Image 1 (cartoon, helix red, strand yellow):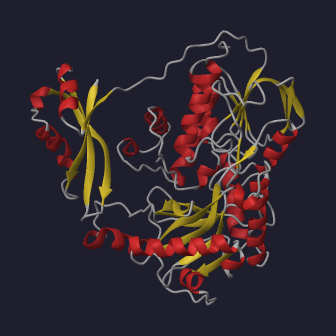
Image 2 (image 1 turned 90 degrees about the horizontal axis):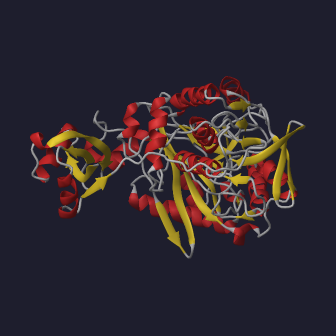
Length: 526
């Protein structure tokens, strides 16, 4: 056991004092301590600027730890739980298959392999090196590869992102995910940062290392292998078809990601129950990173001890929310389409976050009340918006963009100032109010005005909106039961973002691990 001491504040010039301050606050001496180290740290810029830390302490007398946790409200007992599995006794009469090699699929496959199982992974896109070439070609030339792109390929959509490892779920498996990322090449600092990120540059190598470990342990990963069909008979999974090959399958993990819209159609036709769910649409907003630093850090902006400033804003009224999402300090806005004749945007940062601009999605929540209650109504709603964005970009694969002040004020001028849009393959001046339904455009504008009150300069005259951000989460949910299987088909395991059970790299990875456990609790090892 050990204890975690939270809310230890330190000056930005004396962050190393966190451990000594924690010991002093508890009346402990170094002679009482077996181990003491920084657990998590974050920047607090609400009232001045400081670091807020938590400290891990293991005492020579463990019985004292519980007494300290009972005495001090900012102290809790910490137990590092190991992943344990009660293995099932059902024979594996056919393959354990995983559809998708994003965070959910990767961590599901890795966990199965670590416990002696040998799954086969089908990823519809290409392996990393080929994927990077296809994506960079799209950004430079505008020529889209529909098989391999920002949405599809090794590592999933998160490969071309900021590589954020933050999550709202409070699950002990989050620590396991972070430790695995470090094992496969992530910087060790992600273990202690309250808002860890890897960066797209690091993430690409980490994903390849993780894949190689899966293969080393007996798993198999096939690229350019989309799911063509799923056979369900008498409520039970029988087989899966991949590139025309029918493969007997006892368990199929559906970790297909939020953008596998054509796969959703295949699943629906095969008898899999899909339900429409809420998601969000909006645009990417860009500012100078230096301006965001100044707004949040004040006189401390530019201090070498401080990371590029980041924000998370939200506003809710009459049951609808508008919020910022996937904020990328020092990042870029990039083309993320997966179908010809559409425009999709996303944000991306390298680990250094050293780009000139900051960007974030600004999103409005939408629900079946906005787009309909049939299983694929949300898919159709997204497709229509992405096609309209393509048209507003003059059918050139250039994204429609607008100055924030014009979006708020009803104008149409597009005279760039200090903020140069970073979107690749490029932007085209357009009226974004023509893109969204009126009630969504109005609420998006209301949210930006509210955010200006929270961060001075948010609606700055020179800030730029680039659209459309439409792949924030899955537009469907595949209902599953306590055993992890889809309620409509025994043997199908809905998992991760695409199935509607996660929202980001960390929560998807955790859901992948938990899905692996469900499978292992049912089936014997190979």
